[in-house]
Image 1 (cartoon, rainbow, N blue to C red):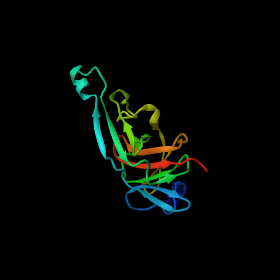
Image 2: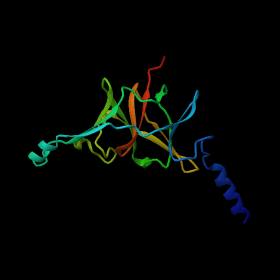
Image 3: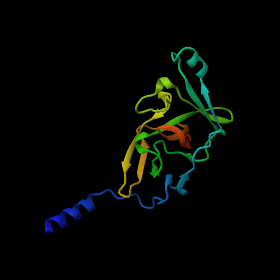
Image 4: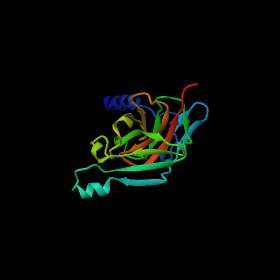
Length: 177
């Protein structure tokens, strides 16, 4: 009995504690020193166009097909300076499929392309390999997860995706001043 109680107390002490103040509501969050907790809203997608479908059908599947997704605006509303931001996920997507994908900047929009030829187990949607940033995952005792890129993100526009392109959460990394 005493041995069992000691094991229980030890196992409780060894469990990782969740980060103090992580919001309890479902969503995707990040913490900034100057503003505190920020909840990311799903990115607005103004256009989703299939590419190469006619040629794919005409050739009997011997050519590539893909999608082009457009986010309106030249930049995401949420701006970060940290090159390895930590995002906190509570009941938001399948964390095993989470990726950060870089968007290509256009004059008034940000664009993401997919290609059937890029599809892999770890990249189910077929994002361009050079635009994919893999994540480290940490499960917290309260069931939330935190994810951060394995490598520094260069300045630019990004989407956090969960295996598929939607829902996605956009943010930008600014150059250090």
